[in-house]
Length: 260
Image (cartoon, rainbow, N blue to C red):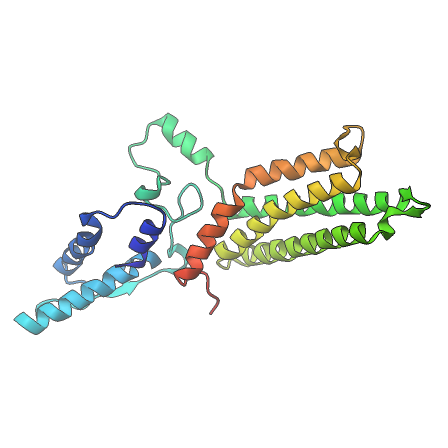
């Protein structure tokens, strides 16, 4: 079974007979034209390998009949993304069809999330969480209990330190993704990682800021309220962290997210 087929099963798409017969049909289409090179996407490479296996077996039985094709994969279009940023597939419901109505086409195009836009949102989230953390540090340094600043309390210090680490991790992953995009290098994995950090860090930092402000941050008259609102907005805009983690894990399992 091909990687793309295992991926569909992993996503809960019920396997049918055509799932197993389709590679044979594709092999027939390829061998018919006696092509030496077959332009395919990265996820279609195994179909060409199956085609070669079929051709070798056929030639061994009936004599030299078919040319053994090689896959031709262009790096810049190795994987065509759908409107949700994942691999385009009819099975995933993220494709744009040639006969879409104007209304349907506009709706799908407006849903398209580009890598540059995602990294821009991550950078915005970085600024939001960094500012929230600074505001919280300033408040806890001034607010006193038992005659000392609450920043000196171990629980407060530990919580703030955890968020500092979070923000710095978001900074690193966002800068890495932005640097790769700026150089024109593939960055889909790094963008996914930055997106995961942006959602989680925004969530955790806004909660910490509210707690360490003693809940005063929910008052619209205080500055943290605006930044907590932005952090939540960005988190919801970037989408589910859990589904993104599952997708990234599947890509790692398929060998698609490994560094050479």
